[in-house]
Length: 195
Image 1 (cartoon, rainbow, N blue to C red):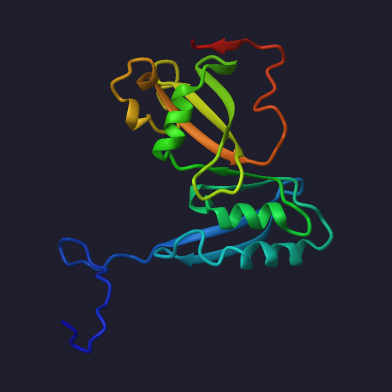
Image 2 (cartoon, helix red, strand yellow):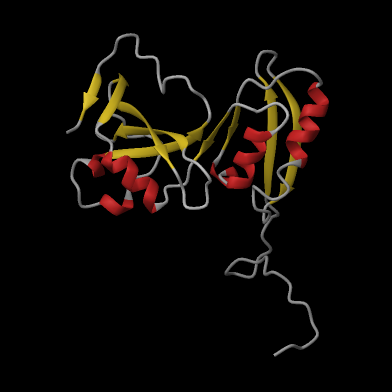
């Protein structure tokens, strides 16, 4: 039932205390000189991908004719619109973006059998993946870290395969990229086959 009043978002905790404002910072760095090229502080309730184009366009303006070697983004920027913007622009931007662990991605990772092992307890695998709303497949890089060897490993366990003793012994991360480099330089390190 409409009352004509606009409801305000509740910003209090369970004890009625006012919660502090939160923010999502977005920062673009120039790595070779270790400086920030651009910075934006957005409200904490804003979705990361909202109005994304304005930020890189401002950044490109600030850096002039310099080329971005690699753009790294977290999973809040995992969207078809952002991929297309980065791939189809006047000058395509090399990117690597963290991928959420959606069920189809978990299935592709679990089906993987060839993992590169650059160091003890960490393995990396590349594969092609096409989401339903993508026009063509993209390259994905999966990283898994053995929990027993690396107890503070970042990443998530694959919830679809919690009952599988081999898969549940790892934490996983996944990234989408247009880079054509190998997922890792092993220096002749072993390739692990888990067949």
